Length: 233
Image (cartoon, rainbow, N blue to C red; front, side, top):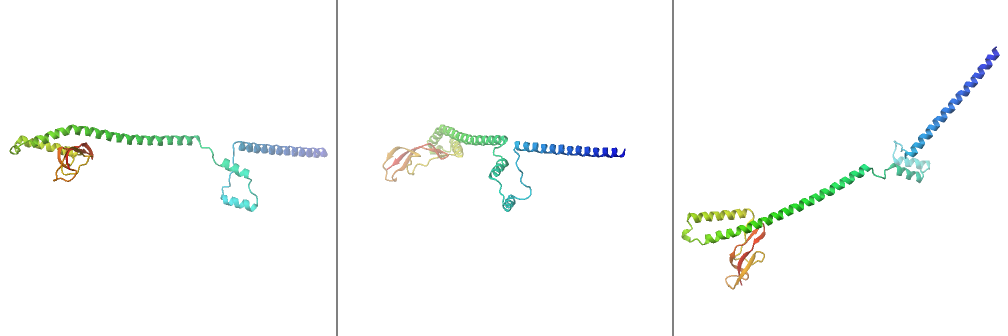
């Protein structure tokens, strides 16, 4: 009986060894298959070889020089190609597009605002000149009426009242930028004066204004009405 039992125990030991070896072989094959699968997935996703965290690029180059092995050009180009994004993200492109559009719209609005302000200023000046031209005949009538008052009647309350109204009117016009053009005794200037008569008079110099028939005015350095004058010599 003992030899039989000894023979059976050896067979069991051999059987267990075979099963153990088979299990290890299957485990090794499974692990190899998983590693191969992960490698294929990494290549399909465009995984790049990560640079070592420790050490700079110079150290890497020095290590390659010492070992005498250089990285193939194809691998370097591939690493650069996959290491950097050559194509911008769609969100970044949209942000750049909207920013550019906003910048152009703001520039256009600023130009429109400046142009509108200039047009408003011109319209205001044109309207002001039109009103001033309508007021100037009233000023002329005040001046003619006051000049026609005899010396003895200038102390009359009515005359004094008219004189005060005239002075107030002239003060108001001056405050808004209306000024009379100097004429008598000044050299004739076609930009400010309109010569309606010519006279030879030795008392005046050449091309000097001898008399003013109608007073001229300027508004903000722009002529509203030219002076009507008589020029000597």
